[in-house]
Image (cartoon, rainbow, N blue to C red; front, side, top):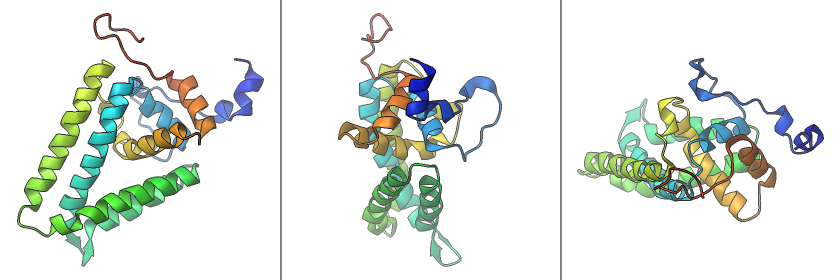
Length: 198
């Protein structure tokens, strides 16, 4: 692709850092860079589908666990949500940040009653375990370990990645799709016998 084509959709202005350099990376990177880094570990469509189950389960579980805790009289789940929402909307993709914040707020609100039950710890830990098991199954199809091993900020990027995938599926965020595919490749179904993509 020509350099002019790269500039036409903003790819030339994006700085991508390979995760295995050992150099700490800023959590304040732009959304495009964060999404490309995350996408490098999530190109198999079965893996992406597993994350549409696993990530919401983990958000629900964190809503329960943190919702049980209070800090200065405030619900820790909502304090964490406020900080993450601010992070999402300041990554350079405002609509994606707003939608991600709204969806995570809905998930947290949904489970607040469970946070006040006697079984809150079981629900919370069980949800995290179930969410990770589903995602690990997805990474079997991917043939790669989860990316958070190299970059812990991926835990926050996960919900934004799902929103980006959903928005791209309905025809929004076309520029983001181009940038992700240029930086991480197209989605595929990896041939489990041969170990390659099909």
